[in-house]
Image (cartoon, rainbow, N blue to C red; front, side, top):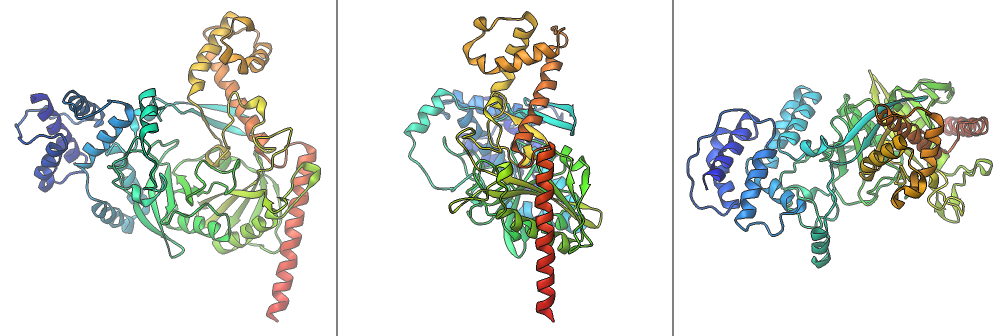
Length: 516
């Protein structure tokens, strides 16, 4: 019994030291923890006054004790996560206090505010720092610059007990999705993640209510999510671009982007309008303009095609001019077809063309990268003509969303073990008939690696595989590009840009006549 009181005291000390808990709130927080753990008495406990780097060890000890007392039913990851967030919430400031503290700092400096809120999101264990450390991450030099590769091991997969529990549970529509504002403080269920220790910041974009939070499984530094106050679907329009520019005006040290609003080329959540941003420089941002495109209708805007595996137009200039030019490009692209390169804007009434836009600041100027997307499928490519083709599915078959577009591969957890097995096969030159059947999908790739690297040893095999995964990711992005990087594709890209510039010019002339 003494152990649990010591753990409670340690958690309270941690919360005080990290600024989560004011001295005046200690008694209250202790009583909340006692109640959560079904304890009715307090026994003072001596603990070492050594600052904890993370609350995870103390929380684990408390949850282990709770399981021993019969307070947990299964001790699965999902149930432990619910308890983890529930206990942490006992020592956290209320949402109104977090909002007030954020905006006190924001009035001094937006970066000070986001630094503080990011730290709070880590300190509160909402950002799963310990789990994120399990991710594999490396960089790979390519012809397009240094790309980031991540194998996502942070998000735990459900075990059989949890899957069985899910089948027993009735469906629920509250919260409607994992982004809704109603997640703040939500305890969680077998179906829905625990969010007791979750805090969000209300922000205004174009006189609309939006909210700002961090991703619990950050893929890059200060990976934030900005979501609409209402549960409304993703929609690409001029106002989307305007909101992105409004955000970087308010938070000039962050970039922000939007996933596309169509299946296949969009993100995993299309039902709730949201953006993703952060404080990180992706390879795409470093990529240079390889061909300048003058925009006579917008002389203050520098425009050009970016040297990138996907089809990217970069616009830099004053905010309103960049917005007007970007909106015009989007509207032009939305209805544009070029059968010579398999681009069709519609199949009947079904639209195929959309964009993935990314906004950032360049000093006093604003910058928008407009990534052209098309989600059409064919008999040859049922998953998408401009999607990783089936020969790449052994590495990546999921949607190519905003994060991948910018040059960070988020690869499935299965690859970690599979790459270890492949390393063994390569070193020992294992014959295909001796391969595990689940590994056959990698055979052709493995043979190509053997041909390229005749001297594979246990000392160099992991470096070789990591490099080749990066090159495979380059091909993934090239497949997702609507205008290919060969002469035919580049000529088609120029035709589209010429068409867009001509339309801009016609519109400007008619606008000028209308004002006379």
